[in-house]
Image 1 (tube, one colour):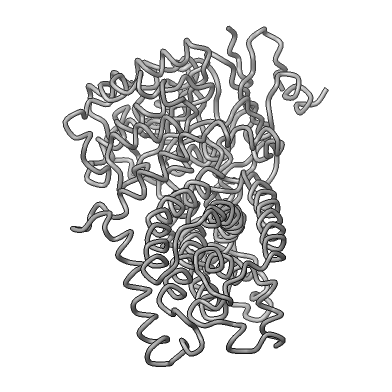
Image 2 (cartoon, helix red, strand yellow):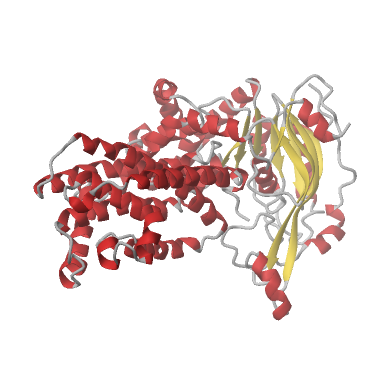
Length: 285
Length: 314
C-alpha cells in the first residue's frame, strides 16, 4: 500500500495536478458573479483617478479615431475611393480597439494579479474572463457612437442592425480565446508584454482599419484573398456592412461562416491551453 | 509512514518532499536558456540550493499545526509547496482541497477600495452574492477597519492590509488555511481575535498551518507543531514539546554556533537570524547565497537525530 493509494482513498488530490476540464469549467461558471463584479469594479477603478472619470472610456477611442482620420485619411489620402470615410473609420477604429485592448491587457491578466492568485484559491480562468468582460462593457458605449455616426452620415436603423448582436458575440468569443492564450504565454515569457503591442499594431495596419482592402488592392488581388480569411478584417468588414448603406457594404455571407469557425476554434484552443497550466499560475520559479 | 488509521481524516499528506532552487552565481534565477549558455561561457555557474530535503508528515482534520524554525529554514518554502506555488523536485504532496495562503505583503487588488476587495475576495472564494451581502458586516467588523473601508487598498498600512486579508480569507470555512507570518504585523488585539478565529476553523473540521516566530501564538493556537531546520524536519509532535525543544536549541546555541557566545539568550519571540541564505529565494534576489547545502549537511546540528514520527493521536 503506497502513500498515493492512501491519499486517493482519503479523497486527496496531488498538489500540482489539475482538475478535470469539466469540473474546472463548472467551477469557473460558479464564479460568474466574481467575474462580473471584477470586470465592473476594474472598469470604474481604471478611470477613477482621472478628472473626467468614465468619460475617458468614450473620449479616448474617439480621439484615436480623430487622429487616425487626420493622419491617414487627410494627410495620406487613404480615404480615396471610400464614400463616407468618417463612419468607415470610426467603425473600424472602435471595433479594432476591442480586439487590441483584450489582446494586450488580457495578456497581463494573470501576471498583474499575482497577489490575488497567490493568496486565494479560485479557478484562475476567472481573471482573463473578467478582463474580456471589462472590455466588452467598454464596447457598449462605443456601439452607440458607431450607430450615431452611421445615422449622421445617412444610414438609418433597420432590422439588419440587430445582426450586430451575433457579430459582437462572436467577436467576444474570439477575443476570449485569444486572451486565454496570451494570458498563459505571458506567464511563461514575461517579455511577451513588450512584443504584443507590435503584433497588435501589425494587425491594425493590415486589417483595413483606415483603408479598404478591396479598393486599394483590387477585388482579385492576393492581399484581398488573405484578408478574406483574416478574422480581424472579417469582423470589421461585417460591422461596416451591417451599419452602413451603399453597394460596397453588402454583407459577405461566407464571412459569417469564417468568423464562427475562427471564434469557436480560438475559444476551444484557448480554454484547453489555459487549463493545461492551471497549477502553474502564481508560481514564482 | 503513518497510514490514516486512527479514524481522523487526513487532509494534507506531505511525502518525502524535496525542493531545490537553481540560482546563478550572480544571484539571478537560472533558466533553461542559461543551461545552454553555460557551454559557451564557463564563468556562469549555477548552483543548487536545497531548500527542503525530504520532509514527510500528515496533517489531519481538526489539526492546527505550528511551523517553527529559524529564518531561512524552509518553513515558507514548505507552505508554498503545499499550496502548489513551488514545484517539488522530488516527492509529492496530496491535499483535500486547494489551500488559501495568507502571507505578509501585497494587497489583493490595490486600486480598489477595501469594500470592493471584501466583495471580490469573498466571491473568488466561492461565496454567492447573497452570502457576501449577509456576511459583509461581519467581515468588516472582524477586520476592524470600518473607518477606512471606502479607501483604496493601496493606501492601507501593512497591518491594515493583513487584517483585511485575514478577515476575507477566513470568511469562508476553509478546509485548509495557511497563515504565513501574516499575523505578525497586526496589533495585539487583532492577533488575539485572529487566533480565536483560527481555533474556530480548526474546531470546524478545518486544518490550519501557522508559521510564526511567536511561540506564544503557536502555543495558544496550535495543538501540534513541526520544527524545520535547514530543510529537514527536526521534530513533529505536540506543540508544547516541540516549542520547548526548539527554544532549548535556540538558547543552547548548538545550531546557532556562528553567533557570538556573548549574545544574550534569545527571548522566545525574538527573530534570531542565522547567517545562512534564506531558503526561500526572495523575488528580487540580489545577493548570492553565501554558503550552500554541502556544509550545512555536515553541520552536526542539522542532522536530525531521527525524524520524529508524528506521535499525535486524536
